[in-house]
Image 1 (spheres, one colour):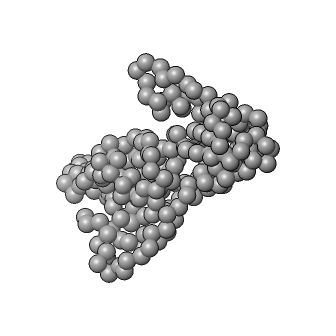
Image 2 (cartoon, rainbow, N blue to C red; image 1 turned 180 degrees about the horizontal axis):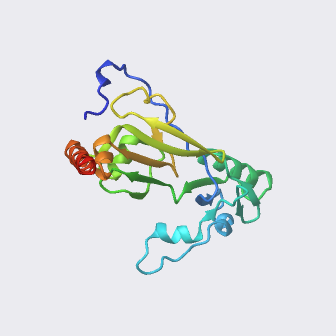
Image 3 (spheres, helix red, strand yellow; image 1 turned 120 degrees about the vertical axis):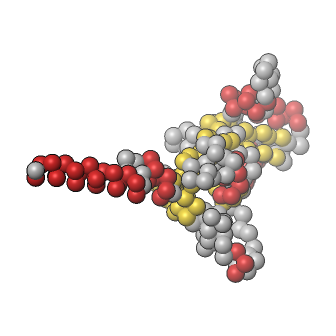
Length: 231
């Protein structure tokens, strides 16, 4: 089945890139510098990279975890509300707190989410949970991580489960059309779950009644039993 079959009828549109919102249990890397580098040292503890591990893996062990209440804790500043903010918003907030508290002069703050991930399940070639680096990837790119749908995947019913403000939002997407291109679900966000449902042929083949031949066989057995009982 062809993807986006009505693509030729669609006019070019400006892409609206979205800044992902920080969520509970996100692991953040917060790097701070200033006009006087020595003054920023307490905010950037140098962590030695252990053998057989990458720098990213080491950062994850010592990153700032967003608490259930939505806070991260930083030296001198204390608790900072991170939940619901974009990375850019949090950078601006931390910079403002450092300046107003006279902790640093002209601070520069760099925030990154270390554990951005998506989960892809169902009728794809490589289902699993994938770490993503880019802030904006489309559903097609996400499915590319899983090596595309199998022949049994229902391209008319892709399910995206997203948590927004602690509420689950569900979107059914038909990959054979483009009517969802302008929706907020065009781009996958961190912690999204994508489920590819099986098509009707796969559902039928996985059940007891897998085809016309099976139905005929069952009907013949039933009729034979009735004939024997009547005799």
